[in-house]
Image (cartoon, rainbow, N blue to C red; front, top):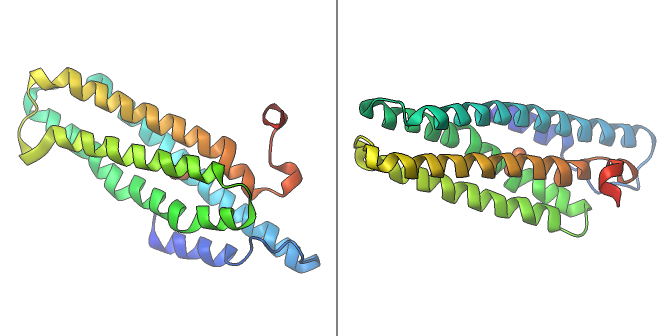
Length: 184
Ligand SMILES: [Fe+2]
Ligand SMILES: [Fe+2]
């Protein structure tokens, strides 16, 4: 996520949450702000889903790679974690979730996905442990690495779905938050 995009979204929606007393033009500005945030997060999540599919392919192909290419393949995944995934999670924790918390009670939804972030970060560090010191990844380590990559992928898939099912609906006006399947 680019910094300018973060500034743009923060500016569009700054102060737009929790302003339910407003009317007319103010309300339409709030709606536009919420929609802009929602569109932005949806776009980010589409990119995350594409990357998760790529991680899946990396996982499937890892055991067939020559020894000298395994570390490089894993490092590309970790580079994506550092450059794209972590900034996305940091933005959610520093801006999106606090804004949602300010207007939605209780805070269980953001609490759940914050916990997901801890698990994802821990699993990424577990992956980083496979390529410490730049050494080649030996065949004896491959099955453990593949399990850790698959675990990372599963955490990411579950997390994205949890955010989309339980957190992003909180950006909608109260009556439109939950699709019928989640109202009961
Ligand atoms: Fe997240
Ligand atoms: Fe997210």
